[in-house]
Every structure is written in C-alpha cells, then in structure tokens.
Amino acid sequence: MKLNKTSSAILAAMTTAGTLGVSSGANADAFIDALTSGKTFATTRLRYESVEQDNALDDATAVTLRTRLGYTTGDFMGFTATAEFEDGRVAFGEDEYAPLSQGFSVIGDPEFTEVDQAFIQYNSDIFTTKIGRQVVTLDNQRFIGHVAWRNNRQTFDAARF
Image (cartoon, rainbow, N blue to C red; front, side, top):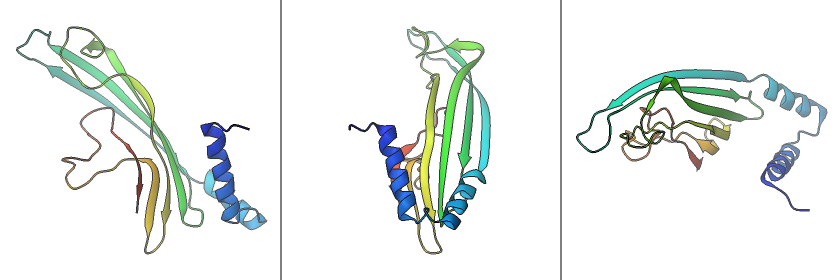
C-alpha cells in the first residue's frame, strides 16, 4: 500500500501517541483533554503601501488585509501542537501593483492562502524543542527573520533545540 503525506502524518501521530502510552485509559483522557482544552487565536492587519519610482513602470498603490487563524493545544506530558493559517487579500479594490497587474511597480504583498505555522513543541525544565513550520528570528532579523513589515510573513521548516 502506498502512503500519501496525510496518511504518513496520521500514522506517525498514532505511533507517537502509542509510544507515549496514550493507550491506557487515564493517558487517553489526558490526551483528549489536551487536544480540546487549547486556545484559538486570530489576528487581522490592514496595510497600505505606495511606490513612486522614476522608471518606465507606473506608480503603485496597494491596500491589503491579512488574516491569521490558529489553534494551540493544551499540554500533554510536556508536548503542545500549534496550527496557524494565513490569508492575504486586496482590500477596497486598491490593487494597482505588481505582481497583480502588469506595468506597475512591485509591492511584495501578493494574494495568498497558506499554512503559516504547524509545529509540535516539547518543554521541560531544562530543554525545549520545536519541530515543524515556524517563525524563526535570529539576532536583530538582519539575515533571518519573518519580514514583519510585509503581510505575508516568512516562516521556515525547521527543528530548533
């Protein structure tokens, strides 16, 4: 039988749950409680940008709206999981910019819908690790960061210890 990515992820989760001892009644209840006692979160951001350049391209203006929706599970034996979705759209019909329209200067906020973050995290008194798609910022974000001034935040597939 050939497994697709979803089947592989479900199989890995089931194997991990079995390894952690979720099969016992008390642990199974604690696992379900961790899944259902988490927190949802949501943010929106309206952004305006204009570009005026002395070149052959027309000046550009954009009004974009970013929406993020997510869920973080409760703690189970030190483990939590987070899933966050992000969507960016043109707002108020203000879309005279590249890459949406030819001949305009570039504003780097395309329309998109994506999984922004999806990671599993383990915390103990002396050790923390996070594996999956996540925001990574190093030092002052000069070379590695999430490019906060754009509506399409940059995330990385990473393992951090």
